[in-house]
Length: 471
Image 1 (cartoon, rainbow, N blue to C red):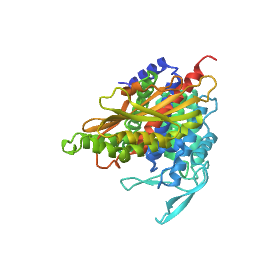
Image 2 (cartoon, helix red, strand yellow; image 1 turned 60 degrees about the vertical axis):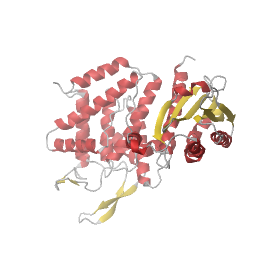
Image 3 (cartoon, rainbow, N blue to C red; image 1 turned 30 degrees about the horizontal axis):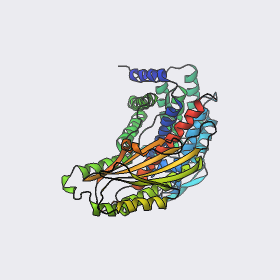
Image 4 (spheres, helix red, strand yellow; image 1 turned 90 degrees about the vertical axis):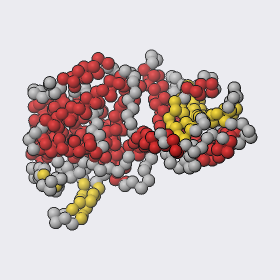
């Protein structure tokens, strides 16, 4: 079978679905950027997790205990991606000057990185973004052999030859666009023209070529099996066998096409994240082991539950979502308790979070009445958009069953600035657990981060809807 048969079919399917709705395109592009920033840097040894990368790029939050250089590399890579997207449809040719400019954006300011002398002694190497390498950067392979890249003296001529070849190939194509992108990636890496950032640059330039031919961003994952396959395929290409690397790139492009098609159809584009994997392991460990069920929902447990979990979770949620306050004129909090057998909840609205907490705590301490649900919401009113203002509410429900509880979330647009609490049963359960002695194992930050992202997605979709509506 032709290597490109499936690829071409998927590309045709995507082209038939274009143009994507603005909110769908924004949603999938954000995912591509986050995944690309995280994985491309992680392949090179960056220590930030996917969640930390997301927090840095979306909220400007740095990860405690992680190197400053790792944060700067993520920021620089994101700037390079944004710059890349701007020039995809421009007539500006791919030149050495353009590549050097992109490298400068990628690495930012001049800096030093740890290195070793020829005799193996530790030293520091000066990195000057935008300039070709000043010293050799050969590598020792897993077999102990040295792989030789272009020397500093050879690099300008090798880069000139690479760009000449690329220009000729674009003027009189002999390669499939994906094969062109893959071969450019390999040729660039074989030269290794810079003192640092060559792997990230090769993937940026590969994606520039792909996007200019109508393909979506393609992300090479940093998980160990994928990374090992990637490096092994590059080694095979170095040894004169380019097919494994071409097949590897084709598979990754196909995956990106499938993701883009799902987005165009309005289907889910979520993939298991680090947090999803941890939650799945926790769920398997706790909920599938009957011996761990040691508590039932009762009055004693109910009285302690506010201090044990609810207070800390909603405090962190309030902090994380405060970033959205500037987009609205006002904000208020609501909360209360649903009781077993009761038809109506006890709900109160306040401008201060402390008042809501007190209402919930008092409700859980109510003697001889067992709670069914604790509900907490943050409502924002008066979105600062002239053409289409709106109000919204983020609703978090703690759902209590006999042996386990769940945490559910829903986001609604408010009518007349007032939430309707009758729909809390429609909330999506994001987390569930048996009752524990200690809830320190629950990652409040990552859980609330998912909730905050849902608020962002809602607002972004409303803005896109307003922008696409006739004036």
